[in-house]
Image (cartoon, rainbow, N blue to C red; front, side, top):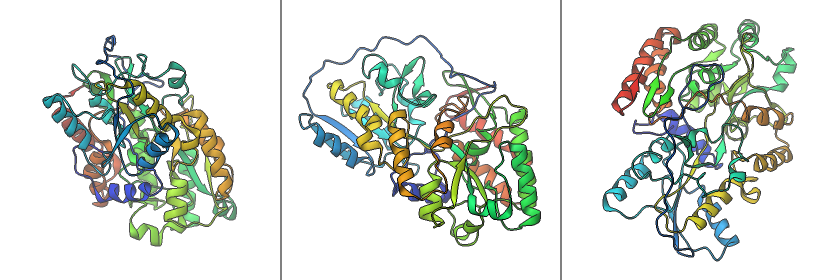
Length: 454
């Protein structure tokens, strides 16, 4: 995730790996306490009043290098639309360029890009705020309702504030249970369906096949893989700039204890999957790995070099006492249309095409947030012949199971975990030992950004 906190080397490694496959969009959302929460609505949305429109006028589009070819493809398919393309960081790798420039444009009264892409889902939390927010409310006759309804359930939650939808989601990175089918069959293990079964198998692996792994806890995005899936209320959005932080909640402590047990046994690593040492010494011994959908091609294929026909994906796990399984999300870029745009039609047409077009999204590096585009994308994955089994069922199921209680905030859970929890783990402390320190770090960061913390 990207915010004003300096990025760790782990995040840079991940973004480097993801970027070359067009998967440079990563997110951090915050959390909610109930079993099936809904995003908080803070007030009744006001009516959007566009500036004077001038259809046919040139629009300025800010995008990262990965998205620029898509913008050019749209331009080629729509030669009547005049576009000025500006390549920028996309707010990847900890950059905060978009917000910084928008603040400048707000002061000078001009310069806002008509369309902007951001790899940081947290950007919606500031782009939707203020007397005249940078982002236009797309649900107010900017993008069609039929288009908005075509996204995976919950995909637009990070874009939704006070009843308005301020962005379109480019892609998802829903977590599934990755596993090496060849190794699982060789060892005679069955794929777990609950976290309790996962823990039991992790203990068994540590005893019967020491050195083999069922997970990692040293990645910056580990909270989004494990604690999000456990419905841990790390940051519950309860209103405008109001959050609840409770890492002593039973749904947080249960996951911390589970991971502590497997870390102690040696079947969950404290390293990050993108470290040189992990890639060299442990990649071939990954038996299972809960993680995002982009792990398939980016991690197992391109980084670990695991041969085709071995890797498969299973449904997200659940705790036995829970009514259903939930999962987290480690990615997903955003498309904004500026509320200052004088050509909302061309701007909205562009972001709609970028987010929903099968011609573009079917060959993208990451799983499209738009359901019809995702079907085409999955067909392409099947044609590669890389996976041991069709990943479509697990991916499609997980896309609809992202727990809605992990809400968009202006601070990065990844950065906080990297600076607080990972050093503690490496010094010999347990996750359970570190929950209090972790909570204080979240609270302090939230408070420094103007949040009221319960």
